Length: 238
Image 1 (cartoon, rainbow, N blue to C red):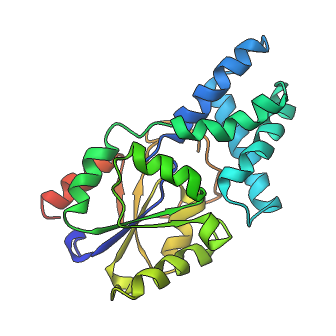
Image 2 (tube, one colour; image 1 turned 90 degrees about the vertical axis):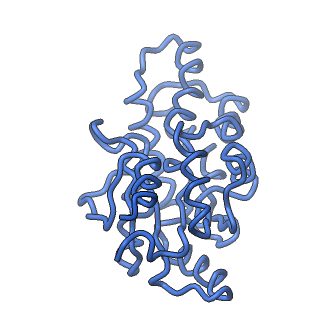
């Protein structure tokens, strides 16, 4: 099947459309400097990924947004960072300012001409409202971990989205799930029978960055390094 045979695209938001690694490192750099420490961006992101993985297992029903204070505390313990109430709470509040990837807005406008676009995010409704504004409101429907009361990679998130959109007649074969994270999205979506498109935002970089690592990389049906490449593939009729 070609891309044009799909009718509905579900999107991971944080890491695929929103550059959360830039958001995280932008938040931590001044804290690290103020503490008089030497910690590079790669170490910040690796620490974040480990703390998030731990928190997913500890509080799997919490939206990612609400995990961030505990993620900060875990990172502070590992890296020797300050733990004032302002520093701890600030990581969550910084989500409002996390930037979109440079290609996200334009590519989403192209894709929306051809597909129904659905956000499928581990963030809560507050954070997704900010992300949607940053992305210039591209979504026809939005599903958050706050709605579902559990986070990806739990299959319930995908089932919830399908249930919402089944009333419009969409079937499994109509979907393409688009995501960066092998841990949160690509592996589970493919196991559930979705066509999957991996946007490998960290192409050419070592490791998994700020996302939890996986023991085996799932081979996607479509593989691009930017969202713009997906839009271009669609426009070219692939």
